[in-house]
Length: 159
Image 1 (cartoon, rainbow, N blue to C red):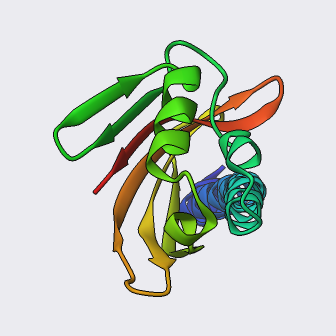
Image 2 (image 1 turned 180 degrees about the horizontal axis):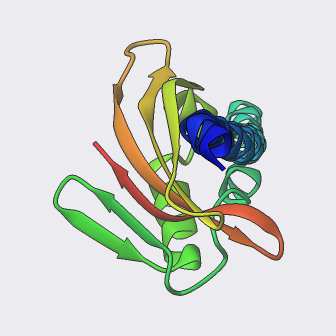
């Protein structure tokens, strides 16, 4: 009995070490799974934005709008104005960019995709139009939501 007591602290320490190692493996597996999910989300959202830029650059505003949620709840904020609803946002783009010269070439840069949940993400970045006579540019914050049709912009705040 005396010899068992002698080894008890060492056995207890060994049991704790094995438990912690198991927990660390589970944490590592969970972190790896989360990282993979976040990378998939990032890639899917960037693909939407790449498709938007490509559509814009070929003069296809409707194709550009495919990146937005086709809903009356879609919000677009720019300057001091708030535009509500997918169709209203489309109409605004068509009114403000009614020629290829006004549309120019669109580029998105400095993109940061930050997951809010498995179903939502916030994206910040920079936009720039390259046109013959000027290069307007600014920043944006987008809220993307995973919908049955894929990742879509539900809220766009562009300056």
